[in-house]
Image (cartoon, rainbow, N blue to C red; front, side):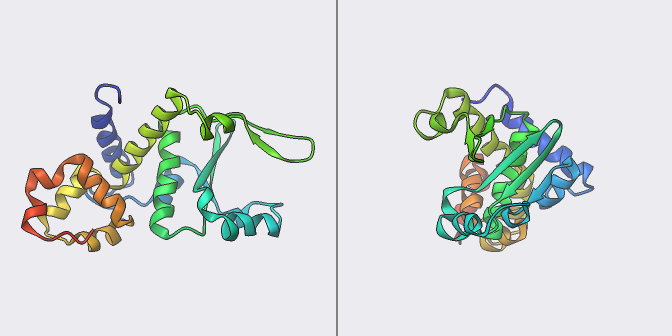
Length: 203
């Protein structure tokens, strides 16, 4: 359950960043541009100094679906390492989700490094087996905000009013058809405009 007014706040934040980047409220918001605006660095695993080839192979070839992106915070500086093997649409969602955590000032997990160089997240066991209510809420908040940043209601309304087909809209906004369908569902945009009845969805 989100706190009262959270969803409206997310729409306002989406509008705020579009104004700051001199975009129309219904324009696509590029996660890379937003990261630069927020001073957040974006790295691919292959850009990280010292990562050995066998580790890159595991991350990007052998087990690429085991992770999406991770944010590293040092002092006031943040960097997002994204899974460069994912599709561009999925990378956009991954980056925006991590940016949402940063915008929401969520408390990150602590990372420790053992003497032999192995990195351990302090919340690893909790995240895998028994996530706390706080962890679940943070993930849900980041998911909602990232969706609002990528596809705010103003953008969905513009898509419907311009009669743009959903597949073309997904490409224009740099998202997957699954993400577009999700936002249509949770915002009730089809019910509001009867878009689902007027035209066949390609999502």
